[in-house]
Length: 388
Image 1: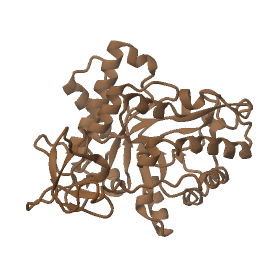
Image 2: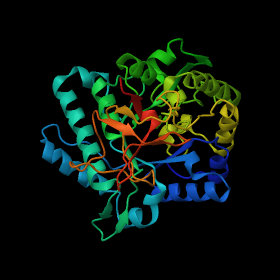
Image 3: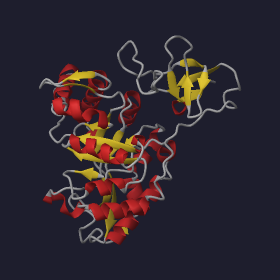
Image 4: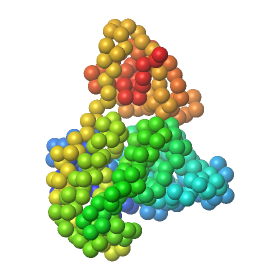
């Protein structure tokens, strides 16, 4: 669900969501705090909902910026919303934060200068967030102090539908543990799905990762049926506001999504933020009120059953009882005993390229202990492969 502003009876809409859901809020971090509180008060597990925050007043650095200037720029951008209220009241409830919205297109990546600009911006944003905000005790400009959880990740791009994503962004996503946000709208005309919608529009992200052979995490920061920039499901040339057609359209898309490796691997962060729930007249044809949101939730509930557990490396796979080497792929994260806190390397970032390690212990839920000293380190079975 994508909230630009709060709608009437929004808690009922949120509680209608299936497990492994996502709720996104624009410029209202306190809404996400309340979402989590409503969710857990209803007896649902915190781990079954992802919260995503986007601040409206965020932009990319000038094209002429140096690396140091780009980092300074993003530090200032993050402090536009990381204030006392955010740190002291909201930070613990937010799982994802976003940078600039839809600042790239396919043409970005074919223009050498524009590609360099966009890549520097994304790299600087991820570097600053991971090194200065994520997992850090932060002091805001207005005197606030608070811990931003190590689990709070920055998303990349917030890329528009029907536009390319280059290999470098997938590599950056894996390196920095920063999911890619693709706006996976599904193209419909008068109740009929565009024949190449999956390849060109709503599934372009899946085709992209298959092409490059890389497996980042994904977020659908905006999604739903569309026909043009302002033509959403209520428009006469799209679905004509027919709720039954909306349910069918969403089921059709989710049927494709659940067949992807990303879904099967648990690499999709929530079911997608259905655009939009607010009062902005610009997007009136996309408007989803509480009854509409509940209807969509009910329509896809039986499909959206993501197994979020890590793939378990069985004893048979690694030779029963033996101390075995495991090779870490680029981007694998290493955790301390609580399985939440990242272990920081000498450069201050929780990342590695390739590392051969001994496996001392495997848990039933897919964690591998890779040290036998005073500092116990763990990796996820999903992130490693057996060394050859």
